[in-house]
Image (cartoon, rainbow, N blue to C red; front, top):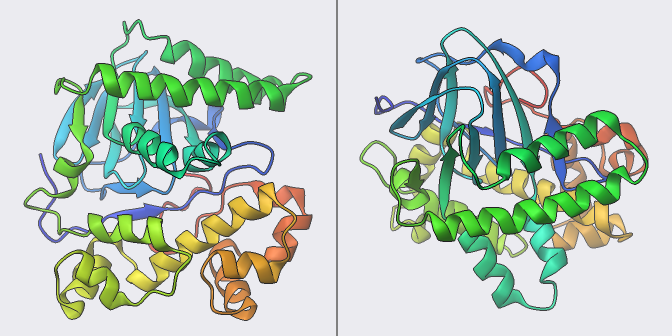
Length: 316
């Protein structure tokens, strides 16, 4: 069961809490009916780790459809099209993790090592069976419990567990890299007959977001004419390429503001905005507040989704 030829994808943007690199989507509100066959696939700017507590249904990894059951764990890298469709009421909980920022912290002095580790980490989407013995389910459950209980040293514990997840997923990628039972290569997913070759543009933006960039640069990275590239990008991602670029830059700005005390002028430059005014305008467009308000108000760490036909539920 694949997508209709002209069906668009949804891009869902998540902003992790300021206190950690993990955004939890947890609790009883996620005991619900999930998706439908008609819903488009979507992709995220962060890693998604999901755990199924109750219910059955189908988990779509691009054109692959995998039946799910309680106890299964899903690991989906950024920019990977997927969706969940339940057969009735299901209960899932999710962790959205900024492993790129975590990798920056771990390998700040070694760019080559950082890129190598992120390449391994993002190489496949993985679905772990209910009887999997890797220990992933237990670690994910521990992180969820930490967010629910918020006991002393909560932040330090979550930070430590996020690093365990980082290395554990790399180990899974290495161990299961040749298995196709529950895996689908990101490149295989993105380059199937029903999906245009826009993955190189997503990669180009991720690597060069801080540099001056023209849409022609993105089109060239995909070996497409600018006109054709603009059309298929908007058709499948459901936003113009320039909006996607600015949204990625806003995400990077949030990351910088969480871990530094840089001025807004400096943050704007580091993220590729031509001026602080342009930075402020785009930040407010996507997150609904100014960068300054975001930085000083701790209540603004919650995920903000906006426009482009994303789900109306905040953080979903």
